[in-house]
Length: 220
Length: 220
DNA sequence: CCTACCGATCGGTAGG
DNA sequence: CCTACCGATCGGTAGG
Image (cartoon, helix red, strand yellow):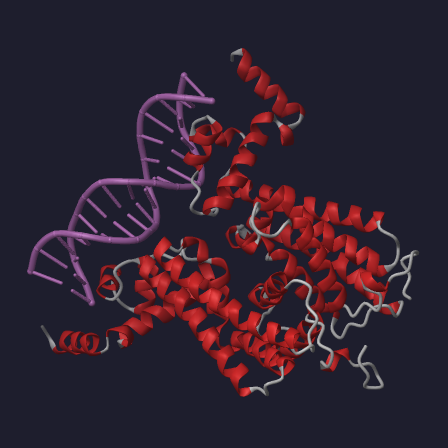
């Protein structure tokens, strides 16, 4: 066992989830899964980009599936954390909390476009165990928005016909962003966030959203 | 050359695009691509489900790629035709045309759920030539909705801040339906169509949503 | 339309 | 962490 092996081994033992090599592999996996898709990305190519041999990947992950599960669960976990933080920091008015949550979702794509893209396209290739974990997290995400909307309806500031379908519609707008948004393209992500938050406030029938005011500042 | 070969050959020659066998292969391909994804679906399995050997598939399609291109282009072509027909049949008021177009999009999933699902997940695996054709058709679809919305804005019955992003949002709501709608599930597709058309009219700031129309479909 | 087959590539393992 | 390797599977072709 040479010095390098000893270093790597002790690192893995002390903090198995965040060894430098493991993180490097995950980072490359995210990029490859994004560019080519899970199935088209090979462990050999992933190894090559990480600067090791294919067999060495299995010192860090038991299978390609574990890699995918790790990517997909961390993606949605990061998203949920960001949205919760934004909603908590916002004023307690449901429209403000909804606006903050949507803006956080849209701006999530600034730092994590590849993760967002993978999340909406590679779920099918996940094995049953990983799928169960991701679906549980998705349910958490749905619940955050359902709660805000239910609060708004109860307070009489939102008017929603069908909360379930409405939440699906709102999350669909956000989830599809990776399919049309391109960094450096014509639309800035902050501009997109502004427009989409406005659309969402209209969707929930917010009686006092910025975009629902006419030129005289009265509700439409 | 026996009778069967002669029949198949003459059929292909007289109407290459719609021979019975070719249609059967396409139908099975749609199901397999939907269930497993393009990459995970093998030509052997497709052949087996069609009742022929893998090599025989190549008498009908030059490659697996051609199969995917055919599926994806026909999917969006069917969708466009349905939406155009619905919008044309509707009254000329932009809100009515938009409502009809959205309802047609949602109800498209009644007959073509697998096609809709494939369209939103398998585009990545299409080769450059097929991708170019599909993107051209997508642009047509966008243009239909952009036109209706622009008409509504010009007529003063819609109020839209950013037409491009708004169209992307509206199409996103429809495009994600295969990710959460399940036939026989809690929500009926006609109910979904009703709710979503309502949301979309809110999104465009329609001054005359369903509840505010008089008998002639004009704003009150 | 079938039988027979090819070269390429894949995820993963043995052993050191 | 590497070398060497395996069994499986893939899309596609030759030839009839």
